[in-house]
Image 1: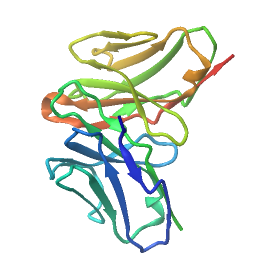
Image 2 (image 1 turned 60 degrees about the vertical axis):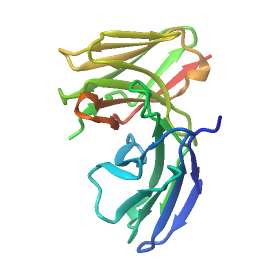
Image 3 (image 1 turned 90 degrees about the vertical axis):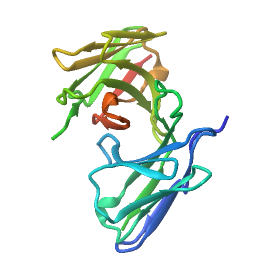
Image 4 (image 1 turned 45 degrees about the vertical axis):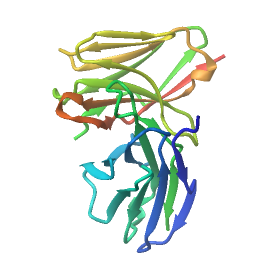
Length: 114
Length: 115
């Protein structure tokens, strides 16, 4: 079975630009979460979506937004990029029908802002 | 303020010996704890979890111990293998508060298992 897939794998943007990152969850998983991992730190929660609705938001500015589509895939958008947005962006999905199911992560998108 | 702390950035052990990775937390609302392993250029992979109603959970070579009074958990890997070399993240969530999917991670510990 395919795991969580993310695209693109790498991306280079310039300060002030906009970026869209994409995620396809594991088949059957209806909940998607986004995390940011800066070098030397653990992943930090950005958003959680379930059934196309935002169910949780971390401590990130409004430049960060996301949405979930009817097929449960998701996009993370970041506007007005800053150098500090350079990070690995991880998407995770979970089988929300199984209370004990852990988050399953994709391999991430490495974003570099210059 | 870091709510989940992994105070050892790195750990080196010999193949076949025990690896012990430690994690401390400050938020007493956390009731579910997980360990993830991460290889370079890959996403974190789930290893093992434990609910706050338990003090131990075992899965093969991996055992997680939880000491709620000390707000401390540890991951034991026995025996350690070279393929276990990776960054290990401790994570916690407030499951009973409905925040199942919002994990708070530590900074990670780089485990190196030497042949």
